Image 1 (cartoon, rainbow, N blue to C red):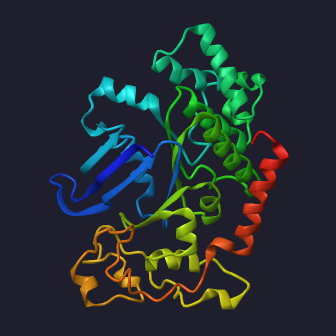
Image 2 (cartoon, rainbow, N blue to C red; image 1 turned 90 degrees about the vertical axis):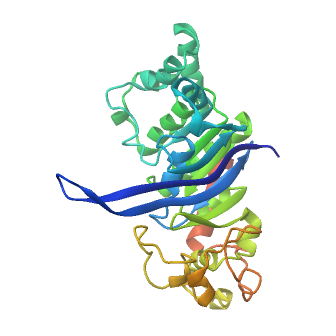
Length: 351
């Protein structure tokens, strides 16, 4: 399958300065530090990891909402990091984002109709009559009624606001949508509706998603492939079913082991994580995960393992079996949520 989006060694470093008048740089926060991945046409790549690992920064880098410190981002082979303002605007017609917080991502001064017309006006799509028709079409796509167009954001629930955010992202007809934790701020029952809406839109419109998440139940429901991120780096990339069936990196195993399960025999030999996430201002030498890894050895402090065969670990072929197959079930609460997602889709018919 053809790659729609390719990130190659992208990085974002923030200087830390001290002083007011003659501020001097005393360090660098390496929020994202050499990340590479691809998103194929029509697929969903989930990017998962702990809070603070750089997921949202990566999302903004691939859309060039923030400028990268290093690396390249290619969209259909074109390096967007070199585009001028006009070419960048044309690119953003084809790549959009759904933000995490539906309360903060909508302009309270605009009606829904004005919110959805704005992308059409910015990109010069259609005239007044066709834009009005497009607004009604977008509202129908996300499960809202035409009369909602005259209302303001504060008149809607969280789930409805996120539907409006999704409609806005779809207004210009993109090929890629970056979903930055789009359901984490919603109630569980509403999460099910929005997740199923995103899946239905993907099937109907042929969209590709870069789906940022920390909820493994959501990831298992929507993703085709999963990239696991730790402290600014990707440590494992695999097909969804393979990753849940056979996690190969110690960090991926620890993330899955953190899900409680009522059967203690299913916990296998996975050792839970200890300690805190190190600071990106002063990351560990060598492998960044070594300070929390139960399998770390001397080489891990000296050499940073490359991402080879989908895993960044010196001992990826020597680790003991995980002893736990997550493909058949997650934690009870996660399993119930997966069932809820499926039931919501069946009940709503079009979602």
